[in-house]
Image (tube, rainbow, N blue to C red; front, top):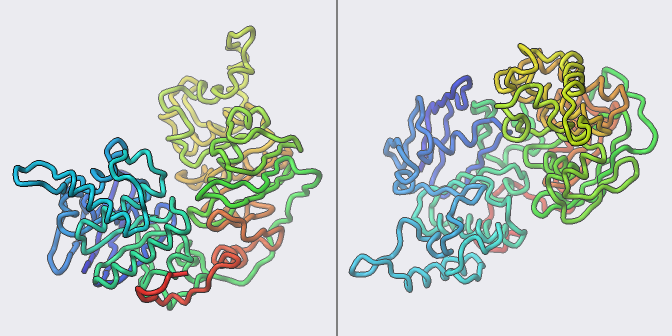
Length: 513
């Protein structure tokens, strides 16, 4: 059905895809997996006409193709269901389902009666009963995702690409989706299935391709790979013998400075509990989408939990409120520093002082002398390389931008620092400096939560690692137990009570439970 050979795509300063091959047969469900930055999204966008390849060939049903637009790819028989619903919220459910291919009468006008009838039939087939004349935005996210699925099903596709299709679905809707996938198999329709949830992969997929750093590192039958081997391929870490920690864990004790108790967020977190003591670095381990960032954001008030509690030094903090978290002494260094951290058009001075301005004011007026002293202190302490405090932060290197963000939150004198991928996208020298700073902060008694996809960084930098999978805590490793082997085994383990899957796809019959 689909054959990809030597597909390559380069963006300024980075090669996102490097000579990737992929083959998918009729009626085959092919898993495409890899960590963040592995090249999955780029490959999907090349297949669906969002990007054009720099090199390589795409052959669909025996015919070489090169799509200039997503519409061309759709007309050729490729439908895509994205993780984020990419429909039109203000239009009706029926209009969204038939957008671009509305049924028309003799005079060329839209036949609304037929469109509403067929839309209702398509959604009922997926177990969704809604008024198809309502605006799409009036539905929940899960129902909107089912509308996107129905649209892809109705497009007479020969290849369906599903990018994290279950991220917003309830368990009942997930079962429906798996039934739809099995029906597609029976009709000879190929499916490329992207997901970080291993249980799903082993339930519905026949074959798997693993991408890492833009290259294909494995293709084969999923049933031939156990979970541990699959995780090792994704992370690029061979399973070795357990080794003792090279350094002793920091001496930490006393009552926790931070406690997160049973944090639950619909579709994201399921009763996550984490405690951090003064001077302790607690790592959050797991694959992309395991709930690491969501946990940090829920603790910092950026993601309101449905239930659960956050305490700092034993005192409860109002959840879902970033100002309350900051006042309590919680600071979050976000994963995407450019979108959620720095203000590139402002100076180094302004970026560092941004959060602390209320505390640097007298009678409502900012005390410039105090601001200058604070900025100068942290520029020197963190060794921020800048032409001066008035240089725009957007002109600095990635590592120095990261240090500016650290300086901003250290100026608040926090009790806990939540660091989400603090060394991503910076050079080796800057990484070493950021790691040194983390150690210094812990030595000074600050509680630190470290999130990192770099397994070596997580193991060497943490006193304790809490491992998450599918939004739940599955293991906790401490001291000399923080090793590659144990971390890999925890990540690859099945959820307690999860059904055991052999990796052999089931027939269309049955409920998939």
